[in-house]
Image (cartoon, rainbow, N blue to C red; front, top):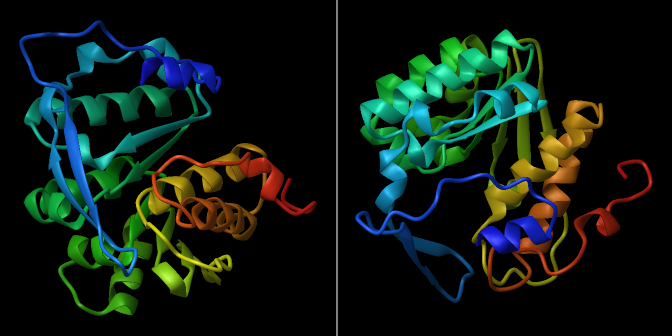
Amino acid sequence: FADDMKTIGVDFRSGGPDSTVPTGRCIIAVTPDAQRTMNTFLGISTQLAFADLDEGLIASGAILYLEGYLFDRDEAKDAFRKAAAVAHAHGRVVSLTLSDSFCVDRHRADFQALVRDEIDLLFANEDELKSLYETTDFDEAVQLLRRDCHIAAVTRSEKGSVVVTRDDVHTIPAAPVSNVVDTTGAGDLFAAGFLRGLTQGKDLTSCARIGAIAAAEVISHVGPRPLVSLVSLLPDDLA
């Protein structure tokens, strides 16, 4: 995994392996309708603490991206808050993905406080957002979100995405896909595309369009890694 990340240009920094704690694993079952069910074992990931983080790296990055799956133990929650404080102290953007509605169910109050107090940009899908605010009404959840978060990008599968700010709500259509094969990684690729646009100074609607194009590629085949250069798929106005 580390070698794969480095090969594509990621400055991958991690501690050495620890044979006393098992590696995280995830079994993904993809059904004929392209939907996936995950059986996840977080393993050593649950041991995340602030001491594991590189403050200099956080300070130097334009955006800090926090993965909700890791927001589990108290030590990890403390690491999230301290990492956000470091990023904000250096004028950086702090983003969070809620990751999974079951994660939100387990830690709802703490997630709500984190979103309200520390997060500049939230990523979530429709189910995760509804879980965050304990409602079955999407529009109600959006209004509550506008109260708590500066910017949020909420994905809605074939309905596209909604970008929410304190002042506006923008709806962006999904990018066309001729054959949806496996939805694994759709949210991750959407976030990646969105953040790519943000770091290049694109407006929020353009960021969501880039995210939609990236997500469309990954759901067109089996597996969560793109098979082509995502930049090559962008139209001239988004490249």
